[in-house]
Amino acid sequence: MIPITVVDVRDAEDLVVEVLRSGAIAQGPMVKRFEDAFAHVAGTKHAIAVNNGTTALVASLQALDLEPGDEVITSPFTFVATLNAILEAGATVRFADIRRDDFALDPDAVAAAVTGRTKVLMPVHLYGQTADMGKLAPIAAERQLKVIEDSAQAVGASFQGRAAGSYGIGCFSLYATKNVTTAEGGVITTDDDELADRLRVLRNQGMRARYQYEVAGHNYRMTDLHAAVGIPQLEKLDQLTAARQANAKRLTEGLSGTPGLDLPQVLPGREHVWHQYTVLVGPHAMLSREELSNALTARGIGNGVYYPKIVFDYECYQGHPLIPDARVEDFPVAGAVAAQALSLPVHPHLTESDVDQVIETVREVLGA
Ligand SMILES: Cc1ncc(COP(=O)(O)O)c(C=O)c1O
Image (cartoon, rainbow, N blue to C red; front, side, top):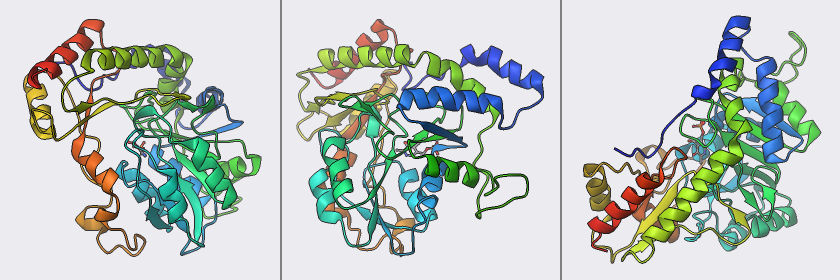
């Protein structure tokens, strides 16, 4: 079996043992060390570690002091955490359709979705490639919108040399299967000193000094044990990313010309870090997306559908007061992509022969 992801954190053993022996296992010096290393990767002044990527998004929205009725524009093709975070923060969600080439927000659709109540633009950098920040950042600047990048899948990615998470507020996930993991964890990145300070206070029950509460906060803290798991990966992130990139390149060379299959693109100026290698199984392929997925699984090739539906197309979101006017039919690109997307193994622990086996199997079952 060639799995869709492999989690290998054995190189963290020494640091984790160091924390265990210290007896100080909650947030402490290891979290600080992790934050410093992460700020370096994101090219930002500050990195605030939290307990997962969802709370990174929630805390970022809370730090902006939104009023009821304030709107956040985001992508309808994302993991549900993006939507849930906005709802938890009490903001109103507006969606804009995506582009088929980067699976991320279409700047024209965003411009059309902005209203007088829009306060935040939340692009999602899906699968390891940034959204079109060259167009999205100016739209946000013109309309005075704050930018919160959902960079959960994009640690190390960049747009024209500028890192994901450095356009305003960046939110990263460190969940087990992410490019950098602490088992569970998240990070918020920013250059804004005041915002960073607010986030640190919010993370710790709104407390600056012991029992001195400044705002109604929360416990969003990361632990030193978790930080210790992530530090060695940050130290060798370039290597891990290069392995993903080499695997993606080999997949694209091997799969090009497969009838009915659209391969993922690296758009000009973008550094893609390949959290997922996602193909689109079009109507002219010999098998449907589901048939291809089943055939690959039967032949020992791990694969995954991220994500099978438009994010709000579930019973629990129907008629939600904070998701007004959202209709599936208004997002045709997101709908088509959700019906066709299939991710193949691209993780850094694949050998060349694993990658070749993925290629041969996909080609064989699609009659190429
Ligand atoms: C796009 C996106 N946003 C947010 C999250 C939430 O991160 P976490 O699972 O760490 O809460 C994830 C992670 O799965 C994600 O993929």
